[in-house]
Amino acid sequence: MNVVWLVPVAFASAFILTGILRRYAFSKHLIDIPNDRSSHSIPTPRGGGVAIVISFLLALCLLYMDGVIPTDLLLSGLGAGAFVAVLGFMDDHGHIAARWRLLGHFAAAGWALYWLDGLPPVYVFDQVFDLGWPGSVLAAFFLVWLLNLYNFMDGIDGLAGVEAVTVSLGACVLYWLDDDNFLMWPPLLLSCSVCGFLIWNFPTARIFMGDAGSGFIGLMLGILALQAGWVSFELFWGWLILLGVFIVDATFTLLRRLLRGEKVYEAHRSHAYQFAARRYGKHWPVTITVGLINLLWLLPIAIGVTRFQFNEVIGLFLGYVPLALLAFRFQAGRTEAL
Picture: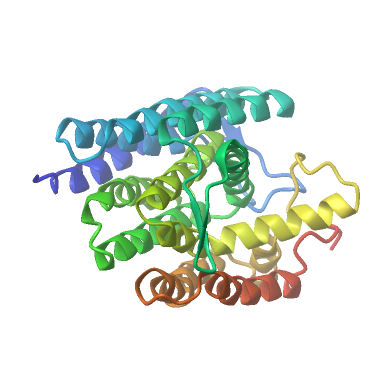
């Protein structure tokens, strides 16, 4: 099946749509005004992530029409992804209470897991555990957490985009080495769609992704990880390792804020990447460093786990511990007073 033509189409459509959405944001006054909890200093339009949503979901439909992806992945991604994107788009236009957003996120996760058949049997320490319906509940929390942490981590120029591109391309490498080439197309086209947007967002952001884009990407990465887990659970471990930067920073920050009794759903700028950006006075060094960590540190570990039978728990530990030390060094989750 020759669907290579979708690569430039996904990129070009996202690039063009982002430009259109930028004009729309200005016309509707959808502008992020800097405040004491912002990591940017100039008013910037938001909502450009809708271009990623439209481009990728269209590509997903075309992959299905060509017989490249199964029905369950199409319905899972299309239904849950579109719903989360619409919810985020509405929140970008006017605030939606956190409890209703969270309810919507769990509804989307439930829809996705219905078509994916829940959590695949878990492989760990050479043992297989079929967790049944408790596993599906665990998978729902995984999807909702990944969706929200991606929103939390979308706070400086290019970071969410570079993370999506490097993680998705890293997953493609894992699939290629594992001879699971049929799995490569969705993450490859997701990375192409994000690249089209990223030109407008990095190294200096001319438009922000917004909740519609960040939540959608987080959910889709989770769905693709679970789909891979049904093929080989080592691939799911590989996804978890590749996502380590965002998982560790967001989780470390959340736990520290919870321990202080803070409202974790309120805006803040106490993630490690935000402290790092303020310390160095620029966004791009932090964003580039995250991309390099993904490609030069986490990807080789993920390859070791998926291709060379390196123990998955040790691999996860090896990948995450240095990231936790970095989060500690940059004081992730501490009070924001500077």
